[in-house]
Image (cartoon, rainbow, N blue to C red; front, top):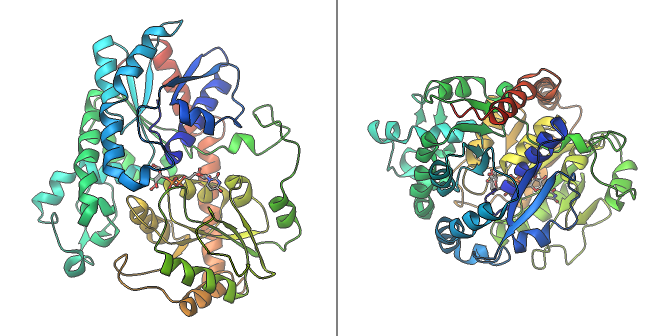
Length: 447
Ligand SMILES: O=c1ccn([C@@H]2O[C@H](COP(=O)(O)OP(=O)(O)O[C@H]3O[C@H](CO)[C@@H](O)[C@H](O)[C@H]3O)[C@@H](O)[C@H]2O)c(=O)[nH]1
């Protein structure tokens, strides 16, 4: 049962597919709303993954951004009854439920029915830990605070997390973000009543925070990532599930570009930056003279003057395939956790331009901890616009293959890529954790 949002459904589908590939006998029922079923119509799922639906009891995905608190309220209160009715209708008994951590009511359903629940956290383990240790922030006087006065102060007492500026904490700790904070804290605190905690991260990417968290729970924590669709990259692999033989135009375009020369730009699937800032970004990237592939969801008027001869603008692309293409040398990203994992897997350095929520913390991890990216903006989000001139200069240096800082960053990105490969390789940490998890749930082992 994924949370109804692209950044949550994608990793849940990847997990379902991996489970199915590992154990073809396991039947997986993936539960989405009718509306999400229609969005997923082009996905090809292995035959043992059944797409089950509940009615559209929540506001449409197409308008949810207009009233986000209302959307969250509906997700918290309207989905449980139809989910239970669906459980009653399923043909075979359920061994375990895997549910997004934000759908915390599923834990109550599982406990009432004596079905173990695995809570799937689709953000970084660090962000989980920050929420889990919220009381420490309050105790040390770091909540509530004014970011403009104290944003540069570093928090160094959250177990396993390197010293972090308050500016780099998830945005829900401040301003209007606080509307969401208490819901998130409740969901994270409910995890202690589940039977497993699953991460889409990999142990190698966040070892100290995962080790520290393990001491807080009396049940298994399994990191299974990077939970990105790497198993679909090789069209000849028996794990590939796409039957689309046609090479999309953007991949053909990438084929004709030089190695590491293209900047891939994508700002996520949901919330976007202000239109004034977007205008600066577009002009800055075009003026930089660097070749680019840009995913734009038709933001109004953005490319009405065209994008010059250097770039290609598409409404959607197969992101992991793009990031793994040898011509792509950089990724301008909003730092959604899936995009971050995909770039880490592909070994592509990032220009970090976080917008909201966990993206600020992910940006810190990319730039300071992994050292595989640069920040587009240093200060408080929303303060001043980054100008087109600043952006053009930044993009030029970031894509400059001769620049020694860039050379070093590319080497680091390769190391991170190797760590991801190690995690998913046979008997690697994530591969073994998935085996342990499947063994546990097939033996009905709850704790
Ligand atoms: O053209 C595109 C653009 C995006 N994607 C995919 O869409 C997903 C986007 O996920 P993510 O990068 O995590 O961004 P959001 O959709 O914005 O993710 C939401 O969910 C994430 C996981 O909880 C959070 O980290 C983010 O802050 C939150 O905005 C990724 O798998 C991308 O590969 C494509 O396949 N093609």
